Length: 359
Image 1 (cartoon, rainbow, N blue to C red):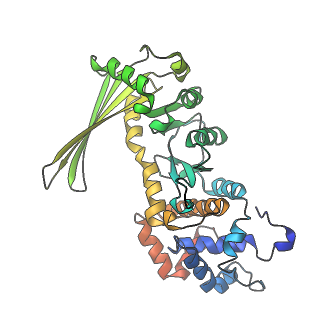
Image 2: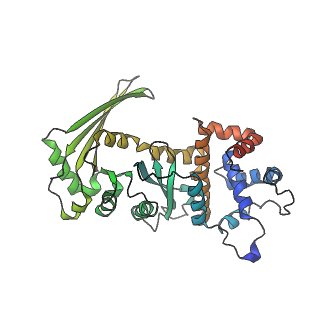
């Protein structure tokens, strides 16, 4: 994992990464100076807890910290994280995963519109991150990186939900060979969308499900309508995608205070032909990946950390993923409150990390 020349190995990578993890668990993300101060203020206690009292190196300085992180193999770091804290696949039981990309806005350089981005596979049932990949948003494509993520992490035999960006023949064909996909359908595939809209306009759905929910001062009703479109005429390039069903989702909202009403419709495609209620639930639970992205921003302050070096951003992204995985083990409902508690009581943080055998 340490890519430095031996002549430059003054600090131990493991010690630095451990201090970094403790700082993020203590709600210090978003500012590298704040992270380094936490590492400095708790350095002696950290060395004592990991039984390195005779370690003769001083804590890494603020100016040196990004230089050292830039020499970490983020690929190996990722492998370690997911080998120990990732979601394990069960070949006998298919799981559903939501996949989406997220840009690290603090990595965007002056004069450019895109920066480093992370694409994640999030298990819908638990919200755990099974795998992730990084790409340079100004040079690389989320579509291509998603394909690599699916292939390299044995996800092609699972249930996968994707947004409309990934509604293309090559991605869907990959999944359809062994697994199930549900993908959004929008104007980026205008001809296919028009064909599907025409096919379902004059027929009744083969299955319908309506789910009312009351939340955040409004009542929202979601109606799922599933249509058979396996025999629909479509371009030859879609044949191997094995498209069998179209799902129309109608969302109607009523604001309780004002009585204001709103309505929106969206279309999805799937190659699943039997488990119709499961399809509806998978569409609903795709929001798990959005929840994870939101926690990276609002709870861990990922977008506020301004670092331009790609490797540093990817290492920090790995630390955040690890921290989210650790927070899941606490069973806490309010992640931000738990980080504040750890910040207020560093001893309790150390005690908990020992209890789960992380230290």
